[in-house]
Each structure stands twice: as C-alpha cells, then as structure tokens.
Image 1 (spheres, rainbow, N blue to C red):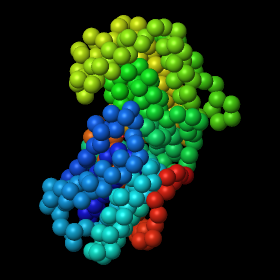
Image 2 (cartoon, protein in one colour):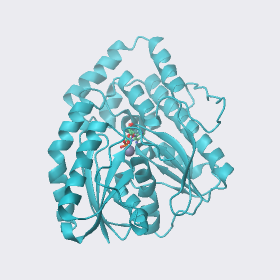
Image 3 (cartoon, protein in one colour):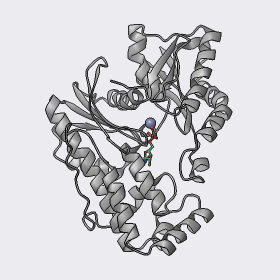
Image 4 (tube, protein in one colour):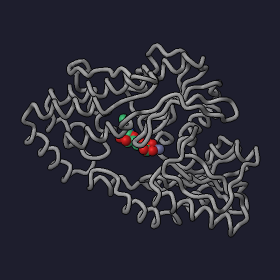
Length: 359
Ligand code: KG4
Ligand code: ZN
C-alpha cells in the first residue's frame, strides 16, 4: 500500500511516497526559505507563487525516485490545514485534480497530525515504537501545542501557547538581533558559545490552564535588553554579513557577535526550552503518558534534545530525525495510513482551513 503525500501549508513544497505506513520510499522538499529570508519572514503571496511553480516537478520527482506509478497508489494524502490558505490551496487543488483524474482516493490530513506521525513512523521503523497514551509536544513556527495521543489516533488538546509559537519567538529574536530568518537554527548553533545562566528570564505562571505556554515575555525581555544597550552597529554588522553570505558559518557569526550577545542567545534558548519541557513533563505526568513525542521545526534544536534526554521526564522521549522535523510530506502520508485502514476518505469538495484544529 503506497500513499503519495503532498504538503504546501507554509514555505516548503513537499511530496513523498510512503509504503506500508512506515517505509519512506521518497521524500522531496523544495524549500523557499532562502527567498523569504530576504524579507525577514514568510511572505504569503510569494509562498503561493513558489508553490505553484514547484508543485508539479516536486510531485513528479517523488513518484520517480520511488518508482511509483499513479496507478500503484492506494491514496493521495494532502495537508488541508492549518497554514496559509493561499499556500494550502496549491497542494490541495493539485491533489484533488490528481485524485479526480486517476480515481485514487483523497485523504485530507491536519498538518499537526502530520508532525506527530513523523515520530510515530520513525519509532516503528527503528524498532522502538511510541507507547500509548503518548504526550505530543508540537513546537514549530506556527504552533506550540500539547496533545494526548491515544492508540489508533484520538487526540485531546491539553495546552497551547497563548501568544507566540516557540519557533516564532526564535524567529523574532533572530530578526531583532540581525541574524536573519529563520532565527531558530542560528540561535541553536551560537548558543553553545554563550552562558545560558547569564541573563535572567522569568518563568510565566499561567492563570487558568497551567499547561498553556507563553513566549511573548521572553521576546519582550530580549527587546528590553537590546534597548538598554547601544547595539545598532553590532546589528548592522550582522546584516552586512548576511548580505554577503546568505548562510554564514558559526565562525563568521562569531566575528560580529560579542560574548554578551552570545550569553543573551544562550539564556533565551535555555528559557524557551525550560518553558517547553516543564509544561510537557507536567502534562505527561497528568495523563500517565508512556511516551513523549516532540515534533515540529523546534524539535531540531540540539539543546532541547539534550535537555529532554538528560532531564527528569516521566517517560521515554521520541524525536524525529532532522529531515522529518521540519515540514515534509512523508509525515502527511504517514498520518493518512490509519485513515486509509479505516476507509476515512475525503470528498473532492473538501476545503483548505487556515485554523483547522486537531482536537
Ligand atoms: O515545522 P516547521 O518547518 O514549519 C512550521 O510548521 O512552522 O518549523 C519552522 C520553525 C521556525 O520557526 C524555525 O526557526 C524553527 O522551526 N526551527 C528551530 C530550529 N530549526 C528550525 N528552532 C530552534 N532550533 C532549531 N534548530
Ligand atoms: Zn510544520
């Protein structure tokens, strides 16, 4: 049973063929990051245009690399939300057209469910399957959510961010300090050069649901720190570096980033990780989780991985490999497998939903 997955919710056009639920036969990702980086973030209109350009060759490449013909497919899985509507529509419309033309059934997938399934897929393939009930922490540029995941795919929302998503906080801090877009990967690489305890960040006490997250305080603390110093020249030097080198090495960044700023980055990252893991640990405890799934772009963060592995978490932790952490289509195909088994197909009039909830 082969499923073609298609993903276009944000700034990657992706297609993949997955067999038997966990064998990734191909996974092709055309990233637009370099283009959006020039504007400091994702520009929705440009994203839609690039998806339009990429969708046909990306899908063709995924089929070719996996030596799959359209008639070999059991289903076409596609992200229907959440995401940018114009971007989602490109993948969705293409998937619908393929389904209509070939008679292969369509399965609409929630992007967040995809992120969770990236981990379930790899854990099965690697012979250490996630045990249920599991707790899923999905942290990306658009979402920071905690879900209880039951065997067979039932989800219950336990907590979510009340303001920025974790990845968004990384991106805003990166942009503010002149590190370009996206901020997460740069901060990840520079943080080991700073002291994570040098700058104090307050851990927000949540009124109401204690499993909700908040990152706007961290972002504001960085802004105040910057305002209290004269950093214009330093930030301008980094912007100049970026103009000459679209993806500077750590050594290059270090020539324009003094120790105090490295301390700030390390402390900010430490505070975000503390926020994520503290609430994830309480949530895992509260549902008696037998596994913790960490997924979404922020799951790439090396300090988060190290802290989760070393920390006092009440259950085994599962991370996706780097290629399946950020947006991809293998995770969308993987999430469609249980739906295919249950015969849960989508009709051709299914729409894209910018704010589609998972639970
Ligand atoms: O899952 P993803 O590719 O797209 C969304 O669905 O949003 O996540 C992208 C986000 C960006 O905010 C990016 O800064 C963050 O993930 N990210 C990281 C790292 N790599 C990507 N954040 C922290 N550390 C990283 N290594
Ligand atoms: Zn994502």
